[in-house]
Image (cartoon, rainbow over all chains, first blue to last red; front, side, top):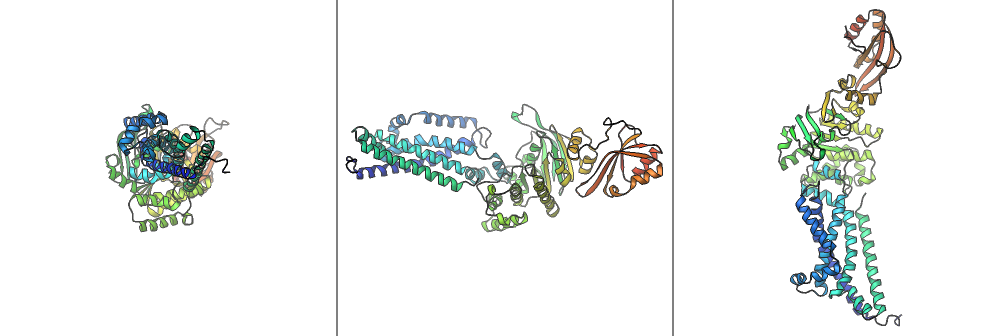
Length: 221
Length: 337
């Protein structure tokens, strides 16, 4: 076993795994904090919805589309000055989080918008008929009804973030992707490559299973 | 309780065609008022104007003393607590339990938690769903879902209940149960009920009065008995025919018959009295029955017969029948002498 994995420094792998988890956790939390309201606003300002506003919706939609169409590797580099301004460095876990959030939040927002569109219009109408305010309709009916879809969207986003964190290694973010590129690829240490890939795979599997379990728990359809 | 004064509604996307066109009607407190029409006739718009889910393009809708269009946000919310609504597809929140659904309007109104619990239990008991309080809507049958809808609509103690095709998604037996529940609420709580439907049978079972809607206009309005037994408009006639079938013996239908073609309508006790035979004996008139039916409208039995009268004193026979409280319509033209 050890003969096959000669280049493996398990302490290094452990640190890299923790870095990846830290990037993922930090970026995911901020993605939800920014992306969920953005998705709700995208939905509510859409045609025929309760805050319909063609200008606001068009502008938001355009911004989301622009951010989503920039390849993540490019975004990482373009963002460097902004990242430095925000967190003081463009390196390490802290330096990776701003580009990760900017890359993932618009994606998540679109998925949230789609999940909200799936909510039965009749339920929204019934809530208004019961005397609900708009805020009560959104918080008390719309979001709870869309929750299974939103959790599924979060799962897809988290998995996309895993591959984004691997790419962030390119600009010195650390983590498993960084390890795979620097040792596995540039130094031809195939064993490091294999171990990091397996760890990333396990991470993605775990996220998917957790996501599905939560969806089952919150879905009563 | 509710009045429509020259109410029109045109949708921006509707290509200029009015969904409602100059509708005027009023619904008295404690009345069960039906609105019947084919799909696209404007029923849905009409009922949504009552609780402000739609706003009129012209005219005024008044509910419980308020001009609905003139209410501000808080006024409208307050009105909506006085006007409950149930829906064809129930529109329950799938993410909340039965109890959670019934409690929802109470929480929206800011009722304290303990009071919400008590009131919810009371409402579920009223619709016979106490045992299912912890279930989710997906685990219920259609009839049970509509009961939850009714309990939810009653939560804030409304004076008016709006029923939007409330039984159209239900099977006949369940429809009967839900209609009974609705009638009971009218009798026991004095609730004013407005229901829209495309089924004359629903109107016949529960309504006091009915308006017939056709392409956004009220083409006929009156007591259910009158509209049902003597429909004036082609639309009303078609709806009656759908539930009762053709009466038979209409002019121009079937074999030519001699004599005068008349339709007799018996209502209430007259339905069961042996009037026809007695009148025939006294006036020497012979009759042949071309078509007929006996049915009931809520608690009123009624009978309708199409007869051909020959021989004897036809005019005297018609006069005698009329005197007995039987309505006589001449189907072959000419006035009842």
